[in-house]
Length: 440
Image 1: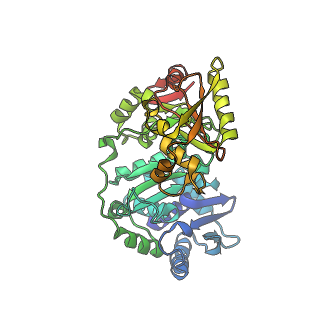
Image 2: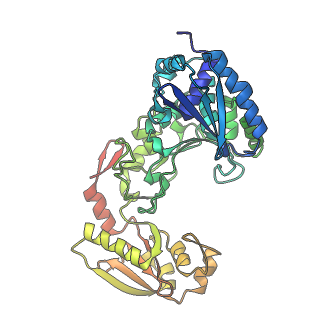
């Protein structure tokens, strides 16, 4: 077998990033809609494929590829009857899969040990060209912090690859800005019933930090990243292992915490921060002592009830009754009446999460989905004398609250981590094994 050179390494990176192999053929999906600034640069994209990628395949593996366009994707595939056995042999040499959607089963450990020098950069460039998004919507809270986001579909369920890739990049001198994991504790931390949490994985770098270490091989993408780099004013974070973590928001115990969509390593487990995943999954760059502090104070970060869940009276009353019957069948459902002003201002409710947003939802003249339109403060001030129905588990307010407006049948559930009912469940239904927080 001929040695793997930098051109082959780039091709193998493309395949890992977005390739699917089916016996004696393959397809590589380049999702250009995610490229960012000018996805309509058709001529540059076509030139990239025809003059660079086609040439790479021909010179390295002695067959030609073509491309098809559709739905914002450019599909690269070999011309009929091409012999791809040499390419598959190279994948095997690097310990990479040779069938199916490679990203779903790829393990980078062998590739990391065997690739050296420019071959590493080329292999990673192939992954970046297929998986890195440059959309300006990726930013750290402000337009001054544009981000390169390496995006991996949640359907892969490949937490291991995410850890391996981020760790490898860190070994090479990168500073990860943030990771988002395909897990309900990250994508639905406050609403335990939100079904849209499967938003995939994202490894994010500030653009300038990315450019000091890596590049894109394709011209169209290189142009875009140079443009968005001009927006950056923020400095990168310190290395992961040295970070001091801010106090995180509590996470609700999601209904999909035990979903088959999650691999066993993260199923039925709670995570308080993205670095908590890194630590539990064994990344050597995780700030272990910071995560240990969070786990030690777990009773401040776990909520078995919705922190804020909006909907109709009927659906949320059903939800509250399900909570009651599951956890507290000995307690009765109780009904109370309170003014908006008391709900907003009284100390009985000061530790509850999301009350202001919930009240704005109840009385907003118009909604965007389940979000109020207009000033939250103005909406609340106009309705301080309105009477609301509060439904609780037990006779006191030391429980999740179902808050109902009689005007339009809108409702919301909110809660406090410090509710005695919640603390009772933490004591009886949570166990800890080192840094892993398990649901019993």
